Length: 571
Image (cartoon, rainbow, N blue to C red):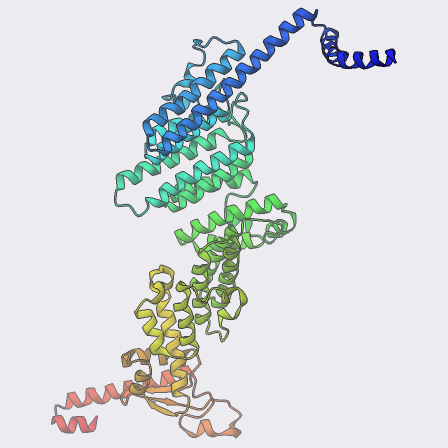
């Protein structure tokens, strides 16, 4: 029993000693040189870790204190506190690296007034807290429209991000840069309607400086932090911004850089051959095809604004010939929308309807409100095509038919299909649903009115062989008789109506298809000749001959200088 008792005693008393001795032994085996020295070394290391932790906590507290000052409206104090975060982290990192804090080798890193000539030098001793603090400083400068300070601090941000000391992940850098570029673009978009031209020009200069710095920093070959993917995306955003700023010359240079980087011909017309199109359809990788479509979207916008129909058509067909590309739905929608407008300008209303419908679906997939705009265009193209299919019969469009912006278009389509020209014109005149606020819609209002008036004319004259132009005018909501004549002439020339206009009597005389006008030649079925006296050419010739004869009679009457009554009777 005594050994057992001793064992229990030994166990209770030696557990602690065993653990202590084991750790001490491992330290000694590692060559630390003895228990006293090892204990002293471990104590010093723990002290350093504690100091590092305290420094990290101090940086975190200072950073969030600065954010609190910013949120409470103490902007100047917040700027100073953010700057103190940068100074604190630089001092800590220098101390940790054994560099004197008063070393002047990297004083330019702390200089906010650094020039762009130092862009190629990443900043040393700056860490993640410096990156966060400088990013907040850039946001504050943008909010207060302090353009010069925003550019200088954004340059500093890029230099910190490119430094290996900062240990910023590529994804974090890309996310931060993209957010900053979006902020700059929103400033330009918000100031587009401003009457202050000086402020707008300053913001445009700010945007161009920010984008130029970004492109230089991430250039695939010459940048301080080469990143081809970020450089390409930045160029696309820059091109879109230049388009919105109407800087077409600079936009063409951006497109040229993008085409060269993706290995495409810089002249859009060089890529329209059958072999190149076939190669693009079969050989494009997913990434390459996506890049082709994204660049084509910029080209289509540019050539659409420049009214260069030939290059616009080439860019559109290039984008549509790509197979394997996976662009963002908004990019695809933009291509289809501008393609639909191109078809509209060429009066290919059927193809325009299809393009607008695809654009509508892509915008809908992206959750973009532009889908309602494309739905309006789809409705307009369908009416101009005189299609009997209601665009709202599709389940994609049906979900939006009760939207306040679409209700007016729904009523317009209903009036169109019912040939209710009074309701149709009333909706347009009252600008219900702000239909007429869209410039593209206004451009085609005349075509819309002409289309529905043509439909009403054909319905009105259907039961008659002769009908007065005044009656047709009345059915068209009282438009001038001259406009009625113009519509009838167009129908006759387009061979949609077989008839002639008696301008003197103000009567439309319809003729049966192939019926004879006058003379036995037209009624001689055995002559072996098919005479189309109702053709446009014969009617025009007959009208000219009657006019010539009338002028001859009038000339003779004036020459005779006879009594006015007899002259008119002779005429």
